[in-house]
Length: 252
Image 1 (cartoon, helix red, strand yellow):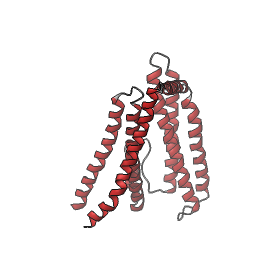
Image 2 (cartoon, rainbow, N blue to C red):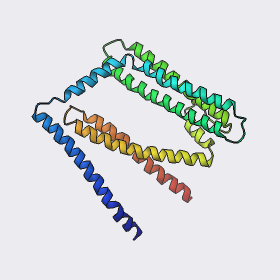
Image 3 (cartoon, helix red, strand yellow):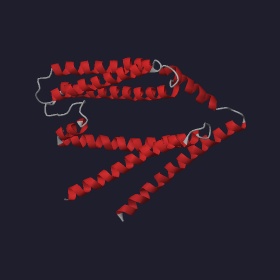
Image 4 (cartoon, helix red, strand yellow):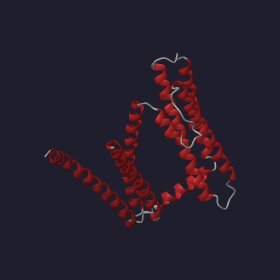
């Protein structure tokens, strides 16, 4: 009875969400259809975007590296200053502030890695018949700096927490790091992973809807939809199988 009651309370919100999604999709489709009727060529936006990415490919990696990695090293330096004033005893405001600064530093370096991968793919698209070696060199240098920034952040974290294990150059770094965390830290990691899982699920749904709508305007290959659903499906499958494995392990 409790399950049915919860279902009845949640059902109206579910239907409203579905109705809102249908209305948004229908409105977007209507606008696109009217654009075709009145001869509005929305493909010009795609041409402009393609040209903008092509123009940025040659300089995007070094410029963004200066911004993101410069910020990452600046945050690391501030965190190191906080640690230098910490006596190594119980956690206080200085140590907590240092950990927050290091987390932001790691985030900036991760963002730069994504930017590097994007523009490296752009090299394969735009520079196959041109000399793309300078951009490849920029990619390698930037990725090296990303790894170095993450290494400095991890090493400082280990200095603050001597029980932590793992090196960023070790292929099993994440596993060793997780095993060296206490129960409270592992619970926080689990909550963060669940949050990432839920947000990624919603993002995948949103990107799928966007691709469907864009396919009405531009010639979008089904390969992009397949890759999106492959990533989404892999995440869903791994999550479910891991839940099954953990439930069996706890029952033993």
